[in-house]
Each structure stands twice: as C-alpha cells, then as structure tokens.
Length: 494
Image (tube, rainbow, N blue to C red; front, side):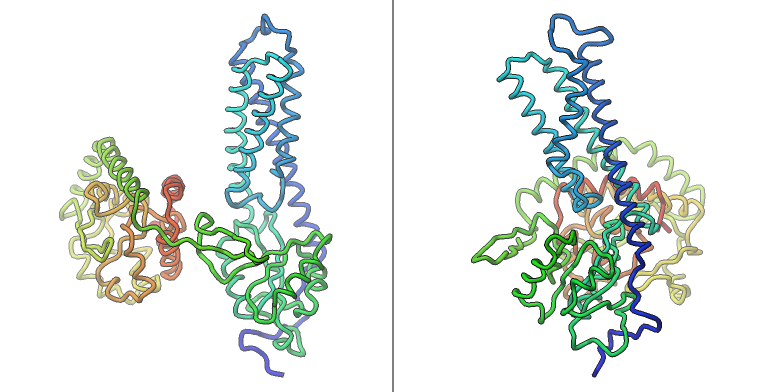
C-alpha cells in the first residue's frame, strides 16, 4: 500500500487526546458561561438602577402606583430570560464574529418592545424615561461587557489556556492541511484541531500524522473517531469520496451526540456580507457577490477619508511641529522624507513621512541586504543601523507616518487600505498580488493591526487581498479602532 507524501508515521500510538484534556476544556467552557451570566446580571442591574436614579433621583417616585422595587428585579429577570431565549449563551456564537452582539441587541430590543406593548395593553403607566434610560444603558453595557469578555477569552486562547472547540477535520490530506493552517492562523477564534480522518486508501498499516495532526480514522469510522477524540465539532472539507449521500448520513449519525457538523467550502477569504445561501432544488447554493471597486460607497469612503484627514491635520499641527523640530535637531538631512510609491491602478505618487533614517540610507541598503529578516520582496531589520535615535522612537509609535494625512487629503491614499508598495516590488508582482492595486493604499490596514513588520510576506499579501475583496465602511472603522491598540502595543514596529 502506497502512503501519501503528506503523511508521516507516528512512533507511539495514534495520538488521541486524553480524557483529562476533554474534561479541562468542558470545565473552561462552563466557567466562561458562568462568567458571562454573572457579567450580564451585573450590567443589567446597574442599568436598571441608573434608569431609576436618572428618572426619580434619591426619592421615591411620586404620583405613581407602580412598585418600582418589584419592577426593577422583574425587569432584570425578564432581560435574562430574553437573552437565554435568543440563544445569547449558545457556545456556537460566543467568542468570535458579530452574531453574538447581534443576538444581545436583538434580545434587548425585543424585550423593550414587549414591555412597551404590555404596558399599553394593560394600561400600566411605567415611566417611559425609566425604561428608555434602562434599556439604553443596558444594551450598550451588555455589548461592551461581551466585547471585554471576548478579549479576555482571546488572550487566554492565544496562551493555549482558554476554552476552545475541539475539532476533528475530515477530508483529503491536502485539504485537511489547508484547513488546519487556516484555523491556526487565528487561534483566538477557538477551533483546536485534535485529529483528522482521511480516505481509506491513504491509511497505512501504522498510525499516521498530517503535519503534527494525528490521523485518528478513515471515512468509514468518523463517528467512532469523533467519540474517541472527545471532539465537539466535525469539520468536513473537500474530498471526492465525501458524496452528498455520505454527508447526509454523517449528519444523521451525529444527531443527538452533541457534536456539531461544520462544512468548510474550498472558497476562502470571502467575508460574510458577500456570501448568500440560496436553497435551490434542495441544494444550499452559495452565491458570492463580486467585489465593489466603484460606486456610491466608494464616494462616501473618499469623502470620509478627506474630511477626517483635514480634521486630523488641523488638530495635530502642534505635534507635527514638535516632531519636525526633533528630527531636525537629531541628525543632518531634511525633515520630510518623500518616497515614490505605487497607488491605485499602478499610478506612482510621492508618499510623505518624517525622516527616520540617515540621509545615505539607500546607498547602505546593499551592504545590509544579507541581514534581511523577512521573506518576500521587503527588507526589514529589527536593529537597522540606518535608523536614527528619534527615528526609532517615531517608528515605535508610528508617528513618522503622520504626514501621510496629506496624501489622504490629496486623494493619493486612503485612511485604510493595503500597504503602499515600492515600484521595485510592483515590478515583481505576479497576477494575484497585483490585485492590491485595485484600491488606494492606506495609512493603516489589516497588516497594521495584525503584526506589522512581524508578518511574513505571504501573510501580508493575504491580508491585503482579503481587504481588497471584502472592504466596507464598517470594516474600516473596526481597523481604525484596532490601529490605536496596535500602535500602543508597539508589536512589530521597527
């Protein structure tokens, strides 16, 4: 029997996870759910108290027969019931994606509507000011609390200590490795691959691994492998042997086991708003909308860019003057460094930065080429001798890029977009990478909030192409918000 070159033998045992690890994950899940419940109770209670105090102050409400000492606790219990009914504690949506926030907001708004209707029908005069303040503070607080809890969970997952879903991946060897790599790029999403099932033809007489993932079974024993590995999710990726009939039967087999079935299509790096599922003749056809490179949304993006850039330049004038003075006093040379970059459609423009290197930095590059610390077409060094003292400080906090606000104001750049490339880089682009030039480059982007200079060339390109294909105004606002944290953290800045 021939073994796939992607497989490697296991020296000792199939490598299935112990029962202790399964119990630990379940305990972490229960602990996180209890933490969310306590957090929600606290937020709702505070919101109700704020509503009461803002409406009535320290005194008892006059001119009303409503016993608010009972209305308050009743509202807290009803709110929790709506959160539970709308599945705001469903582990499938906790910790990743926007669905958790949407459910929390939906539960709060539905309760507010139900209370308003019930009060009108029963002719009960509960203060509208009390309800408006309580629901406003409570809904905002619940979303903020969930956001904070998610960040705590993400940090724990990054350390390998947080609750994650245990995943068994099923598919051909190459597709299994691709899906495993995709899930591991974002460990905070909470999908921990613990095993794989591959076609029977690839199994060898001895246990195998795909990379560092143990192969725990074949397509004939998926249910048994899932049970033995203690997984709560079976992720099925592409395979010629996994026909529609076999997938349907697998779904039947998993009924009542508490194990979720997830289908991972071969199409990747496409954001949710561009994907629509349309059932046709019993088939869940996935419709993918084309990327949007022009139109009204692009005009709004350009208007927002220039308005924000003008406001930011005006407010930052004192800081810009102080930085310019520091650069001038620190080393010989111009204050502003102008470098030719390539923008949308391949048009070249001059990007402005505060000078952070010595004046002969370009001539010294050839001597340092062998010490390049990154792959691809970029040159990066953590301890680049060409960087000045002030320049090192400016780079750490991204202050050297503030003059690029002028580029945004002139229309050459956007606030958010792909990293602006050099002409020498563009000259070596292949067909796929050249799609970065379909939109304006940005002062910040997914590359900025995902590690900056610590990213590999391949990861940087992947993030840029993802943005080009899936950009939206909401995504831009999210990236701008995350940029603040990335700059303060300083990771990958050199």
